[in-house]
Length: 184
Image 1 (cartoon, rainbow, N blue to C red):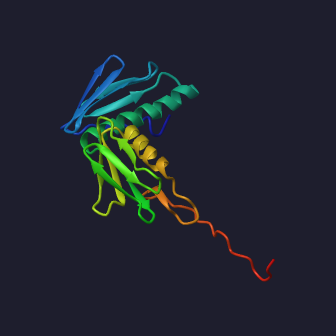
Image 2: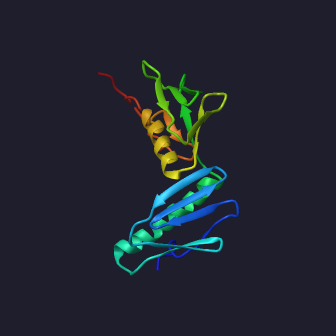
Image 3: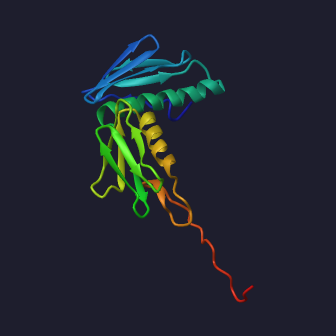
């Protein structure tokens, strides 16, 4: 049995879960999320818990069991608390700013890079312009947008310049040591 899949998903009082065939709808204070469950998986709503069951122990069903449970748990968390990813901009003159729902990055290119927030995603930049927060209800979408922002200027290993996740560890390299003893 999947250790993740067999755990029931607690549903807070302010959240409503709807089951309509294979479609699960989760509604909470932050909005509504919907998900189509794989036909092999069975979702039950009992009291204030959601339980995911699988028909047999085939490898595919084992994998789908844990995945389905994790996705549904993320939906419940998303409509109650939401998700946030923070990115840090390092480099002289590198900064970001938000105008409406467009994030503008100045990261050493000849032009600023504009990233528009899709529906359900919001950007925040601190007053120094160095820390970007990507927030939303869908964990997958928040992670994807944060990855797109990071891809604009990945952190490089010599000076550490670029855009990195807040908790990311950048492996640093020594760089050129210079010639020791002797000239040309």
